[in-house]
Length: 418
Image (tube, rainbow, N blue to C red; front, side, top):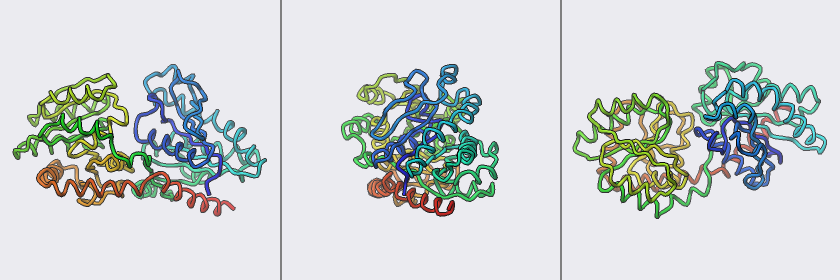
């Protein structure tokens, strides 16, 4: 059973300042789902330094922006000034968690669930465990540390962390990665907001699909990082076009320097690149501008709200979430829920069944991806089946189902602790 009071500790969170990747989506939606289920949730994150330090959010959820005095000196994002923030969290958060949450809970005869996310919080978890023991309230604490990625694993003192907290992971792939450090983990997958199961906004989707015209359109969204297999996407597009299919790729990446490598490869393969800067919030303008761009690669420089992003997924002929190293693959599930066709890699995306509910690439070879895309573009029946089965799969991964799994894993953790 999940305790009534829950604290989630994560550098990423719902603010644009702290919304860098899938971790922000995970903790925001997990907090929202727990709050909706009747829990009292405190979400600690490295939030916008200009926003309130403490702010009521969704029902049952309180946002607590930690280390704002450091964030004010590092305005780029939550990871800007990371060493100072990590140190501040290690020293200031454990006393707050233990004295303001755990000790009062013990006095009421209750427990508190604390979920720490990623390497930045490993020492925080260790300190929470130590302080709770010193205060004599460890029995009122269920402490978990969760791995979403392998980043920073080399910085963690695993024997101490595994004694302090139950270790969890978001997929069997991450469980395997942890086993390489001799760490056993419980698998608790990510979920999606059940509201996504309604699919993308029909009006936006229709407008974006019309903007693509008769050309098959692929979309790829993510950081410019080699792990995301950007070069495979570029090579596949070149091969598809060489086969006489006038396809194009809509790209929305980040500001990472690897983007230069990606677009350099496009030009090497004879693919013209157009940069489309879009700072507005009117999706109609976005559709109009996409309609008049005719280059094979469109570099979309824009912050897209969720509704527009999901409409883009649904409108595209394929969404290339083809990472070579993907701990879970939340984007693939979101694509399925939006009504799109997900192209995944073959690591943490355990929900993806090749040519049943998704296209799955086993290699980083552009020719493999091109082969599958050519089959998809030439077979409308396959496309319809992938969209339909993808939607069915997404329905099995809502946060409601994930919370059921979390509750059972907590029961096991508490049984072991007795």
